[in-house]
Length: 184
Image 1: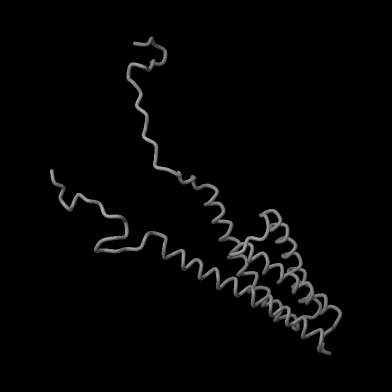
Image 2 (image 1 turned 60 degrees about the vertical axis):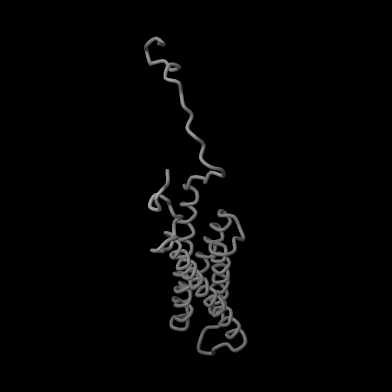
């Protein structure tokens, strides 16, 4: 018996109509978007450090220096924690999920305290700091939500078998006993 060429199966992704494997293209888009969001958080953290250093070296006489130092210190520490947590959630796992959650609470508390204190005490002078922290916080939220979604998917996904699937065992029909009846 000879087999015709139509009965031969080709591996997926090969042949005339080559199509990419499902999800292959979306992975590179997801990684690219993740890299952009990490860069946004990195830039926000660097801008906060630069603003703190600039104000420490050349304070603005029109702004109350005491509250501004407190605000910039809180916001800079929050931005640096945001950067560390972003790296942890994206490319470089540094700490456990519990520790990251605890540090996230500290980061949000410091950041929100800096924003509220800045708006209430120095007003317009804290506007750029508030905007930067909002943009960085938005990128951080997207990254952590994506990380949490991927962690849930990994946790619920069945483990891939290492070897080929086992053949189902055949049970003799005479070897079974019916419920409530006698064996035949």
